[in-house]
Length: 434
Ligand SMILES: [Zn+2]
Ligand SMILES: [Zn+2]
Image 1 (cartoon, rainbow, N blue to C red):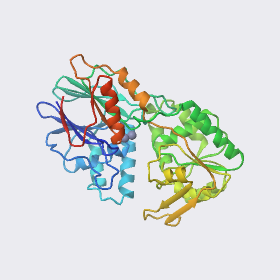
Image 2 (image 1 turned 180 degrees about the vertical axis):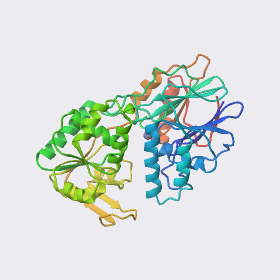
Image 3 (image 1 turned 135 degrees about the vertical axis):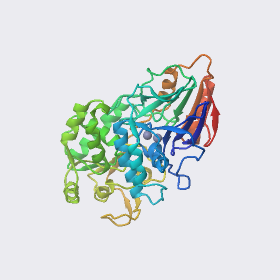
Image 4 (image 1 turned 120 degrees about the vertical axis):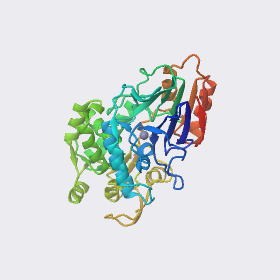
Protein backbone atom coordinates (compact mmCIF):
# COMPACT_ATOMS: atom_id res chain seq x y z
CA UNK A 1 0.00 0.00 0.00
CA UNK A 2 0.96 3.65 -0.48
CA UNK A 3 0.62 6.59 1.92
CA UNK A 4 0.83 10.17 0.64
CA UNK A 5 1.05 13.01 3.15
CA UNK A 6 -1.14 15.87 1.93
CA UNK A 7 -0.47 18.24 4.83
CA UNK A 8 0.17 18.76 8.54
CA UNK A 9 3.81 17.90 7.84
CA UNK A 10 6.15 19.84 10.10
CA UNK A 11 3.26 22.25 10.63
CA UNK A 12 -0.19 22.28 12.21
CA UNK A 13 -2.86 22.76 9.59
CA UNK A 14 -4.30 21.23 6.39
CA UNK A 15 -4.25 17.67 7.72
CA UNK A 16 -4.73 15.11 4.98
CA UNK A 17 -3.55 11.56 4.28
CA UNK A 18 -4.12 9.65 1.06
CA UNK A 19 -4.07 5.87 1.40
CA UNK A 20 -3.89 3.76 -1.75
CA UNK A 21 -4.10 -0.01 -2.13
CA UNK A 22 -2.11 -2.19 -4.57
CA UNK A 23 -4.98 -2.16 -7.05
CA UNK A 24 -5.33 1.62 -6.90
CA UNK A 25 -8.30 2.11 -4.53
CA UNK A 26 -7.90 5.41 -2.71
CA UNK A 27 -9.19 6.77 0.59
CA UNK A 28 -8.56 10.19 2.13
CA UNK A 29 -8.32 10.63 5.90
CA UNK A 30 -9.01 14.24 6.97
CA UNK A 31 -8.89 17.20 4.61
CA UNK A 32 -8.29 20.38 6.56
CA UNK A 33 -7.27 23.94 5.94
CA UNK A 34 -3.96 25.52 6.89
CA UNK A 35 -3.38 28.68 8.85
CA UNK A 36 -0.55 30.07 6.68
CA UNK A 37 -1.89 32.73 4.37
CA UNK A 38 -0.14 31.27 1.28
CA UNK A 39 -0.78 27.56 1.69
CA UNK A 40 -4.28 27.02 2.96
CA UNK A 41 -5.20 23.84 1.11
CA UNK A 42 -3.85 20.28 1.22
CA UNK A 43 -1.29 19.09 -1.33
CA UNK A 44 -2.79 18.38 -4.74
CA UNK A 45 -2.31 14.95 -6.19
CA UNK A 46 -4.10 12.48 -8.46
CA UNK A 47 -7.26 11.26 -6.68
CA UNK A 48 -9.09 9.80 -9.67
CA UNK A 49 -9.80 6.52 -7.88
CA UNK A 50 -11.03 7.99 -4.61
CA UNK A 51 -13.55 5.60 -3.01
CA UNK A 52 -14.03 7.07 0.47
CA UNK A 53 -13.26 9.99 2.74
CA UNK A 54 -13.10 9.67 6.53
CA UNK A 55 -12.78 12.32 9.23
CA UNK A 56 -11.08 12.12 12.63
CA UNK A 57 -12.78 15.23 14.11
CA UNK A 58 -14.38 18.54 13.31
CA UNK A 59 -11.55 21.04 13.96
CA UNK A 60 -11.07 22.93 10.69
CA UNK A 61 -7.40 21.97 10.38
CA UNK A 62 -8.86 18.46 9.76
CA UNK A 63 -12.23 19.21 8.17
CA UNK A 64 -12.06 22.68 6.62
CA UNK A 65 -11.18 21.70 3.04
CA UNK A 66 -13.59 18.73 2.79
CA UNK A 67 -16.14 20.64 0.65
CA UNK A 68 -13.44 21.00 -2.02
CA UNK A 69 -13.76 17.24 -2.62
CA UNK A 70 -17.50 17.61 -3.31
CA UNK A 71 -17.44 19.92 -6.32
CA UNK A 72 -18.53 17.16 -8.68
CA UNK A 73 -18.07 13.79 -7.03
CA UNK A 74 -20.34 11.69 -4.82
CA UNK A 75 -17.79 9.91 -2.67
CA UNK A 76 -19.02 8.39 0.60
CA UNK A 77 -17.97 10.45 3.61
CA UNK A 78 -17.55 8.56 6.89
CA UNK A 79 -17.93 10.32 10.21
CA UNK A 80 -20.28 10.31 13.23
CA UNK A 81 -23.32 12.50 14.01
CA UNK A 82 -21.66 14.87 16.48
CA UNK A 83 -18.64 15.42 14.22
CA UNK A 84 -20.90 16.17 11.26
CA UNK A 85 -23.00 18.66 13.24
CA UNK A 86 -19.96 20.50 14.64
CA UNK A 87 -18.10 20.38 11.32
CA UNK A 88 -21.03 22.06 9.61
CA UNK A 89 -21.07 24.92 12.13
CA UNK A 90 -17.30 25.37 11.99
CA UNK A 91 -17.03 25.32 8.18
CA UNK A 92 -19.93 27.77 7.81
CA UNK A 93 -18.26 30.04 10.35
CA UNK A 94 -14.93 29.69 8.53
CA UNK A 95 -16.44 30.61 5.15
CA UNK A 96 -18.41 33.50 6.62
CA UNK A 97 -15.61 35.25 8.51
CA UNK A 98 -12.64 34.57 6.26
CA UNK A 99 -11.11 37.08 3.91
CA UNK A 100 -9.44 34.20 2.09
CA UNK A 101 -11.41 33.24 -1.04
CA UNK A 102 -12.01 29.52 -0.42
CA UNK A 103 -12.65 27.70 -3.73
CA UNK A 104 -15.90 26.24 -2.37
CA UNK A 105 -18.98 27.35 -0.49
CA UNK A 106 -22.25 26.26 1.10
CA UNK A 107 -23.31 24.26 -1.98
CA UNK A 108 -20.33 21.89 -1.66
CA UNK A 109 -20.88 21.63 2.09
CA UNK A 110 -24.44 20.51 1.32
CA UNK A 111 -23.18 17.84 -1.08
CA UNK A 112 -20.79 16.62 1.60
CA UNK A 113 -23.74 16.23 4.00
CA UNK A 114 -25.78 14.36 1.39
CA UNK A 115 -22.98 11.80 0.97
CA UNK A 116 -22.40 11.22 4.68
CA UNK A 117 -22.49 7.78 6.31
CA UNK A 118 -22.30 7.41 10.07
CA UNK A 119 -19.79 4.92 11.37
CA UNK A 120 -19.84 3.63 14.96
CA UNK A 121 -16.55 3.22 16.81
CA UNK A 122 -15.29 -0.34 16.55
CA UNK A 123 -17.31 -1.18 13.40
CA UNK A 124 -15.13 -2.41 10.54
CA UNK A 125 -16.26 -0.62 7.36
CA UNK A 126 -15.43 -2.13 3.98
CA UNK A 127 -14.27 0.37 1.36
CA UNK A 128 -13.17 -2.21 -1.22
CA UNK A 129 -11.73 -5.74 -1.32
CA UNK A 130 -8.84 -5.81 1.13
CA UNK A 131 -9.60 -2.22 2.23
CA UNK A 132 -11.28 -1.49 5.59
CA UNK A 133 -11.47 1.39 8.04
CA UNK A 134 -12.41 1.34 11.75
CA UNK A 135 -12.95 4.30 14.12
CA UNK A 136 -11.41 4.21 17.61
CA UNK A 137 -11.95 6.73 20.45
CA UNK A 138 -9.28 9.48 20.37
CA UNK A 139 -10.21 11.42 23.55
CA UNK A 140 -9.54 14.83 21.95
CA UNK A 141 -12.99 16.45 21.60
CA UNK A 142 -16.50 14.94 21.57
CA UNK A 143 -16.75 12.59 18.56
CA UNK A 144 -13.00 12.55 17.84
CA UNK A 145 -11.58 9.28 16.55
CA UNK A 146 -8.35 7.65 15.46
CA UNK A 147 -8.68 5.67 12.23
CA UNK A 148 -7.45 2.13 11.77
CA UNK A 149 -6.81 1.26 8.12
CA UNK A 150 -6.44 -2.32 6.89
CA UNK A 151 -5.19 -2.43 3.31
CA UNK A 152 -3.61 -5.39 1.47
CA UNK A 153 -3.20 -7.14 4.83
CA UNK A 154 -1.22 -4.25 6.30
CA UNK A 155 -2.52 -2.40 9.37
CA UNK A 156 -2.00 1.34 9.84
CA UNK A 157 -3.24 3.52 12.70
CA UNK A 158 -3.71 7.25 12.11
CA UNK A 159 -4.03 8.76 15.59
CA UNK A 160 -5.65 12.04 14.53
CA UNK A 161 -5.46 14.43 17.49
CA UNK A 162 -5.35 12.43 20.72
CA UNK A 163 -5.61 12.86 24.45
CA UNK A 164 -4.86 9.87 26.65
CA UNK A 165 -6.15 11.57 29.82
CA UNK A 166 -9.75 11.39 30.96
CA UNK A 167 -11.25 14.88 30.96
CA UNK A 168 -14.52 15.99 32.52
CA UNK A 169 -16.15 16.11 29.09
CA UNK A 170 -15.01 12.91 27.36
CA UNK A 171 -13.28 9.56 27.70
CA UNK A 172 -9.58 9.16 26.89
CA UNK A 173 -7.99 7.76 23.72
CA UNK A 174 -8.41 4.01 23.44
CA UNK A 175 -5.23 2.11 22.68
CA UNK A 176 -6.47 -1.24 24.02
CA UNK A 177 -8.60 -2.10 21.00
CA UNK A 178 -5.83 -1.46 18.49
CA UNK A 179 -4.56 -4.67 16.86
CA UNK A 180 -0.87 -5.28 16.07
CA UNK A 181 0.28 -2.55 13.68
CA UNK A 182 2.55 -2.26 10.72
CA UNK A 183 2.62 1.51 10.79
CA UNK A 184 1.58 4.34 13.10
CA UNK A 185 0.93 7.94 12.07
CA UNK A 186 1.00 10.04 15.23
CA UNK A 187 0.30 13.67 16.09
CA UNK A 188 3.14 15.70 17.67
CA UNK A 189 1.45 18.96 18.74
CA UNK A 190 2.90 18.96 22.27
CA UNK A 191 5.70 16.46 21.76
CA UNK A 192 8.11 18.94 23.37
CA UNK A 193 5.94 19.99 26.29
CA UNK A 194 4.74 18.60 29.57
CA UNK A 195 1.33 19.69 30.80
CA UNK A 196 0.89 20.52 34.50
CA UNK A 197 -1.11 18.03 36.60
CA UNK A 198 -4.76 18.42 35.64
CA UNK A 199 -6.39 18.22 39.08
CA UNK A 200 -4.22 20.96 40.54
CA UNK A 201 -4.82 23.16 37.51
CA UNK A 202 -8.59 22.78 37.90
CA UNK A 203 -8.42 23.66 41.60
CA UNK A 204 -6.21 26.69 40.93
CA UNK A 205 -8.57 28.00 38.26
CA UNK A 206 -11.68 27.67 40.42
CA UNK A 207 -9.91 29.24 43.40
CA UNK A 208 -8.84 32.25 41.35
CA UNK A 209 -12.35 32.60 39.88
CA UNK A 210 -13.94 32.44 43.33
CA UNK A 211 -11.59 35.10 44.64
CA UNK A 212 -12.57 37.52 41.85
CA UNK A 213 -16.31 36.93 41.75
CA UNK A 214 -16.71 36.81 45.54
CA UNK A 215 -15.36 40.36 45.50
CA UNK A 216 -17.88 41.51 42.91
CA UNK A 217 -15.64 41.12 39.83
CA UNK A 218 -16.09 39.41 36.50
CA UNK A 219 -13.95 36.66 34.98
CA UNK A 220 -13.78 36.42 31.21
CA UNK A 221 -12.77 32.97 29.97
CA UNK A 222 -12.08 33.20 26.25
CA UNK A 223 -12.23 29.44 25.71
CA UNK A 224 -12.46 27.65 22.37
CA UNK A 225 -16.12 27.06 21.55
CA UNK A 226 -15.54 23.42 20.70
CA UNK A 227 -14.98 21.31 23.83
CA UNK A 228 -12.86 23.67 25.97
CA UNK A 229 -15.78 25.95 26.91
CA UNK A 230 -17.79 22.92 27.96
CA UNK A 231 -14.83 21.48 29.90
CA UNK A 232 -14.62 24.75 31.87
CA UNK A 233 -18.38 24.57 32.57
CA UNK A 234 -17.93 21.03 33.91
CA UNK A 235 -15.00 22.09 36.10
CA UNK A 236 -17.14 24.85 37.63
CA UNK A 237 -19.89 22.29 38.21
CA UNK A 238 -17.46 19.78 39.73
CA UNK A 239 -16.16 22.30 42.27
CA UNK A 240 -19.68 23.52 42.98
CA UNK A 241 -19.09 27.09 41.84
CA UNK A 242 -22.01 29.13 43.14
CA UNK A 243 -21.67 32.40 41.22
CA UNK A 244 -23.31 33.37 37.95
CA UNK A 245 -22.13 31.80 34.69
CA UNK A 246 -22.79 33.30 31.27
CA UNK A 247 -22.08 31.53 28.02
CA UNK A 248 -21.92 33.31 24.68
CA UNK A 249 -21.08 32.93 20.98
CA UNK A 250 -19.85 29.68 19.49
CA UNK A 251 -19.58 28.14 23.00
CA UNK A 252 -23.34 28.44 23.35
CA UNK A 253 -24.01 26.94 19.92
CA UNK A 254 -21.66 23.97 20.47
CA UNK A 255 -23.08 23.27 23.94
CA UNK A 256 -26.55 22.90 22.41
CA UNK A 257 -25.18 20.48 19.80
CA UNK A 258 -23.51 18.35 22.49
CA UNK A 259 -26.83 18.12 24.34
CA UNK A 260 -28.32 16.58 21.21
CA UNK A 261 -25.63 13.84 21.11
CA UNK A 262 -25.40 12.50 24.68
CA UNK A 263 -23.59 9.32 23.57
CA UNK A 264 -20.45 11.35 22.88
CA UNK A 265 -20.31 13.00 26.32
CA UNK A 266 -18.72 11.15 29.25
CA UNK A 267 -21.26 12.16 31.89
CA UNK A 268 -24.33 13.65 30.27
CA UNK A 269 -26.12 14.12 33.61
CA UNK A 270 -23.37 16.42 34.94
CA UNK A 271 -23.24 18.16 31.58
CA UNK A 272 -26.98 18.85 31.60
CA UNK A 273 -26.74 20.08 35.19
CA UNK A 274 -23.82 22.38 34.35
CA UNK A 275 -25.61 23.84 31.35
CA UNK A 276 -28.80 24.38 33.32
CA UNK A 277 -26.93 26.66 35.71
CA UNK A 278 -25.43 28.74 32.89
CA UNK A 279 -27.22 31.70 31.34
CA UNK A 280 -27.18 31.60 27.55
CA UNK A 281 -26.50 35.04 26.12
CA UNK A 282 -28.47 35.31 22.92
CA UNK A 283 -29.15 39.02 22.45
CA UNK A 284 -27.01 42.17 22.43
CA UNK A 285 -29.29 43.60 25.11
CA UNK A 286 -28.42 40.74 27.46
CA UNK A 287 -24.73 41.45 26.91
CA UNK A 288 -25.02 44.92 28.38
CA UNK A 289 -26.69 43.39 31.45
CA UNK A 290 -23.89 40.80 31.72
CA UNK A 291 -21.28 43.58 31.57
CA UNK A 292 -22.76 45.05 34.74
CA UNK A 293 -23.03 41.77 36.62
CA UNK A 294 -20.42 39.82 38.57
CA UNK A 295 -19.72 36.22 37.53
CA UNK A 296 -17.97 34.12 34.91
CA UNK A 297 -18.34 34.78 31.18
CA UNK A 298 -17.34 31.94 28.87
CA UNK A 299 -16.99 33.35 25.37
CA UNK A 300 -14.76 32.40 22.42
CA UNK A 301 -12.52 32.91 20.61
CA UNK A 302 -9.85 31.07 22.55
CA UNK A 303 -6.96 33.33 21.50
CA UNK A 304 -8.97 36.57 21.54
CA UNK A 305 -8.76 36.88 17.76
CA UNK A 306 -12.48 37.67 17.52
CA UNK A 307 -15.81 36.22 18.52
CA UNK A 308 -18.07 37.03 21.44
CA UNK A 309 -15.13 37.53 23.87
CA UNK A 310 -14.33 40.82 22.15
CA UNK A 311 -17.73 42.17 23.16
CA UNK A 312 -16.72 42.04 26.82
CA UNK A 313 -13.00 42.61 26.76
CA UNK A 314 -12.84 46.39 26.93
CA UNK A 315 -14.96 46.50 30.09
CA UNK A 316 -12.92 43.81 31.81
CA UNK A 317 -9.40 44.91 30.81
CA UNK A 318 -9.87 48.24 32.55
CA UNK A 319 -11.42 46.85 35.72
CA UNK A 320 -8.86 45.99 38.43
CA UNK A 321 -11.45 43.88 40.27
CA UNK A 322 -11.99 41.59 37.25
CA UNK A 323 -9.88 39.00 35.40
CA UNK A 324 -9.21 37.32 32.07
CA UNK A 325 -8.17 33.66 32.32
CA UNK A 326 -7.03 32.02 29.11
CA UNK A 327 -7.45 28.25 29.12
CA UNK A 328 -5.86 27.16 25.85
CA UNK A 329 -2.49 27.46 24.16
CA UNK A 330 -1.85 30.96 22.77
CA UNK A 331 -0.14 30.97 19.39
CA UNK A 332 2.52 33.64 18.94
CA UNK A 333 1.20 36.80 17.33
CA UNK A 334 -2.36 36.37 18.61
CA UNK A 335 -3.96 39.01 20.90
CA UNK A 336 -4.19 36.38 23.67
CA UNK A 337 -0.45 35.74 23.56
CA UNK A 338 0.24 39.48 23.60
CA UNK A 339 -1.87 39.87 26.72
CA UNK A 340 -0.08 37.04 28.55
CA UNK A 341 3.44 38.12 27.49
CA UNK A 342 3.15 41.91 27.73
CA UNK A 343 -0.03 42.70 29.63
CA UNK A 344 -1.28 44.59 26.60
CA UNK A 345 -4.28 43.65 24.51
CA UNK A 346 -3.96 44.62 20.85
CA UNK A 347 -6.76 43.92 18.46
CA UNK A 348 -7.50 44.83 14.87
CA UNK A 349 -11.03 44.26 13.66
CA UNK A 350 -11.12 42.16 10.51
CA UNK A 351 -13.64 44.56 9.01
CA UNK A 352 -16.84 42.91 10.13
CA UNK A 353 -19.48 44.83 11.99
CA UNK A 354 -18.72 45.24 15.65
CA UNK A 355 -19.93 47.45 18.41
CA UNK A 356 -16.39 48.43 19.22
CA UNK A 357 -13.80 50.59 17.50
CA UNK A 358 -11.76 48.98 14.72
CA UNK A 359 -8.49 48.98 16.62
CA UNK A 360 -7.86 48.48 20.29
CA UNK A 361 -4.67 48.79 22.32
CA UNK A 362 -5.34 48.55 26.02
CA UNK A 363 -2.99 47.98 28.92
CA UNK A 364 -4.60 45.46 31.23
CA UNK A 365 -5.31 46.65 34.75
CA UNK A 366 -7.35 43.53 35.47
CA UNK A 367 -5.82 40.24 36.61
CA UNK A 368 -4.85 37.92 33.75
CA UNK A 369 -3.29 34.49 33.49
CA UNK A 370 -2.92 31.38 31.36
CA UNK A 371 -4.02 27.93 32.54
CA UNK A 372 -2.54 25.17 30.43
CA UNK A 373 -5.58 22.98 29.79
CA UNK A 374 -4.98 20.91 26.72
CA UNK A 375 -6.82 18.38 24.61
CA UNK A 376 -3.58 16.95 23.17
CA UNK A 377 -1.26 14.47 24.82
CA UNK A 378 2.09 15.85 25.93
CA UNK A 379 5.56 14.29 25.55
CA UNK A 380 5.14 11.78 28.39
CA UNK A 381 1.70 10.66 27.30
CA UNK A 382 2.56 10.36 23.60
CA UNK A 383 5.45 8.05 24.53
CA UNK A 384 3.18 6.04 26.88
CA UNK A 385 0.53 5.75 24.18
CA UNK A 386 3.05 4.42 21.65
CA UNK A 387 4.57 2.04 24.22
CA UNK A 388 1.08 0.58 24.78
CA UNK A 389 0.67 -0.23 21.08
CA UNK A 390 1.97 -3.46 19.62
CA UNK A 391 3.63 -3.87 16.26
CA UNK A 392 3.63 -6.94 14.01
CA UNK A 393 6.75 -9.10 14.32
CA UNK A 394 7.58 -8.77 10.63
CA UNK A 395 6.91 -5.00 10.51
CA UNK A 396 9.55 -2.27 10.52
CA UNK A 397 7.89 -0.46 13.47
CA UNK A 398 7.19 2.52 11.22
CA UNK A 399 6.10 5.71 12.99
CA UNK A 400 5.37 8.90 11.06
CA UNK A 401 5.31 12.04 13.21
CA UNK A 402 2.98 14.75 11.89
CA UNK A 403 0.75 17.58 13.18
CA UNK A 404 3.37 19.64 14.99
CA UNK A 405 5.91 22.30 14.07
CA UNK A 406 9.26 21.39 12.53
CA UNK A 407 10.96 21.05 15.92
CA UNK A 408 8.23 18.95 17.58
CA UNK A 409 7.82 16.47 14.73
CA UNK A 410 11.55 15.94 14.11
CA UNK A 411 12.40 15.74 17.83
CA UNK A 412 9.67 13.16 18.46
CA UNK A 413 10.86 11.18 15.44
CA UNK A 414 14.43 11.16 16.74
CA UNK A 415 13.34 10.17 20.27
CA UNK A 416 11.39 7.25 18.78
CA UNK A 417 14.28 6.23 16.54
CA UNK A 418 16.44 5.96 19.67
CA UNK A 419 13.79 3.65 21.14
CA UNK A 420 14.07 1.32 18.14
CA UNK A 421 11.22 2.56 15.96
CA UNK A 422 11.69 3.37 12.31
CA UNK A 423 10.51 6.93 12.73
CA UNK A 424 10.42 9.97 10.48
CA UNK A 425 8.78 13.40 10.24
CA UNK A 426 7.54 13.34 6.63
CA UNK A 427 7.43 16.38 4.34
CA UNK A 428 4.33 17.46 2.47
CA UNK A 429 3.71 15.53 -0.76
CA UNK A 430 5.99 12.63 0.19
CA UNK A 431 4.83 9.14 -0.75
CA UNK A 432 5.72 6.06 1.29
CA UNK A 433 5.34 2.42 0.31
CA UNK A 434 4.33 0.28 3.30
ZN1 LIG B 1 -8.04 18.94 16.90
ZN1 LIG C 1 -5.51 19.26 14.73
